[in-house]
Length: 352
Ligand code: TLP
Image (cartoon, rainbow, N blue to C red; front, side, top):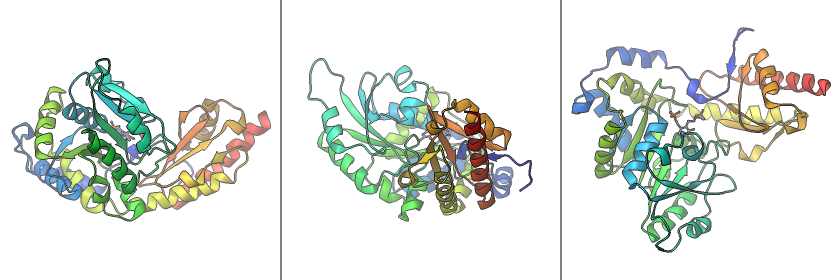
């Protein structure tokens, strides 16, 4: 690691494609995917469906597009969607759930990202002329704003039971579902079995440059394909996106464990620093959230101090800093990041 090297812990979305991915892009067999004729896309979609234990899959441009396409394929305008109050779909997707899908999001609070089935029961109100029809429940795995928390297969099953009892569908924003599976050392199908459909991202910890995949029944994916088209997401020689995706599914999943180890070590190091508080129990995958209110300075000042010393981070609420580990972040970067946070906090405390 050179002294000038920037340690970018803002997100796992900053990962660059591997050499092998770039080679695969160069040599991908291509066709027009709007005609269903891109063999590389077709192969990725088959692999993804297989891996998730579902009938079919659809490559889309981004996680945000995957969620929007899925919302619209699962519902009709004017219906009500129950989701966790800190859900990415609710916070960070420009309100597409209402503005484009025409749905009423009904946020339900939770402790660590997993909806309590009793709260979901309460949210499903009895039929009444005044109420929109609830048709969909959404969960997020791992849960971004809850610091990469895992929603366990058992918790998913419990929500699925409620959904089934009321005739609602269950959708999973599984942007980082492979992180959850690797962390619990179980097959990803443990997480997908009890949801009707889901999406996962290729462009985060799996290191692809672009792309997410929506997975579900054949009927659902046929509908999703049409909705992707109306949203302008019909792509032509999309094999250049699918080719690295195939490598991601074949080779990039197991290594997520390394990111989790690094996040743990990072959290343990940060927990020893005065003025910072980290809840080590919630560090389950590749994210570390910590509270800097003990420093008594504006978040911008704290982040700029880190940046001056070569560490990039983001906040996700006032005084809450988020660091994300990913491919390209090695043990020595973690030690350096801890040292940078420590010296930044010391400098800021001495100014107060
Ligand atoms: N999350 C990004 C930012 O948007 C915050 C990040 O850096 O974590 N679902 C979940 C759970 C996500 O974390 C994200 C991206 C998305 C959906 C959207 O994916 P993209 O960015 O591909 O549209």
